[in-house]
Amino acid sequence: MRDSASGPRVLLKRLRELMQEPLEPQERLDRIVRDIASNMVAEVCSLYVLRADSVLELYATEGLNPNAVHLAQLRLGQGLVGTIAASARPLNLSNAQEHPAFAYLPETGEEIYNSFLGVPVLRAGRTLGVLVVQNKTMRHYRDDEVEALETTAMVIAEMIATGDLERLTRPGLELDLRRPVSFTGLSFNEGVGLGHVVLHEPRIVVTNLFNEDSEEEVRRLDASLGSLR
Image (cartoon, rainbow, N blue to C red; front, side, top):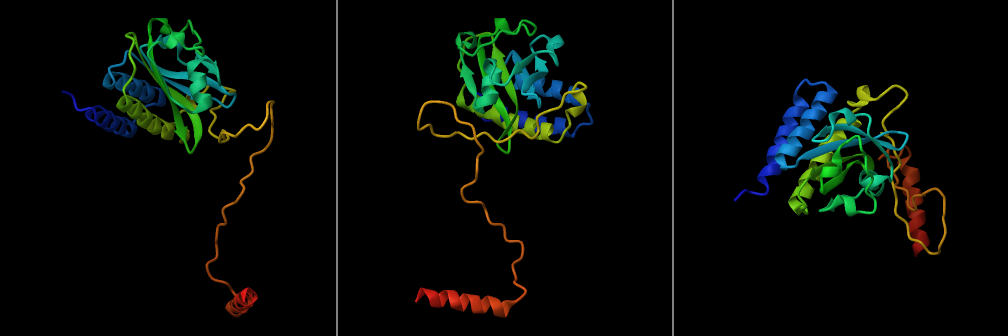
């Protein structure tokens, strides 16, 4: 019986090796998705990267039509991939085409695949993209497989955040590396509300540990203590 932890360990070791090799960004991405698909016994592995115009662009794939790379796109919130990016939550589906958010992209050739597991590529609370694996057979991916893909997505997030993929971006477009953090609020009434999120208790950062006038500080401390009596 295969150790369920051996797969993720082998994959992460391989990813570390790929990150250290002197490869061009596209070749590195192509090999990463190929290794993920092989390790997870998936027929498809795809990486979508979020651009600054709120569009998720297919940056690499193993299993889908390779001609769709840098051409297939989904808006934030559109389709399964866009839903994952907007919610920053994974989707684990045994029959993806039955999900109400499913959007068909004819250029990718993904209509023959049923099972779908997608996780957000997150860094510091920001969504940078979506990592997906797919299979023809209907199946529900195990918890350890979801965790392995999420861990892999963290490695890819660092690669995106360093700007390594900017050379692959078409002229006039840029990646969304500074997307605001998304906050979930509580609704007290029906309708739509727009506003700015304000931190209720800002963190106080002490930059000077020693006061220049220690005698004055002692005097103020004594006065404060005296007011408590």
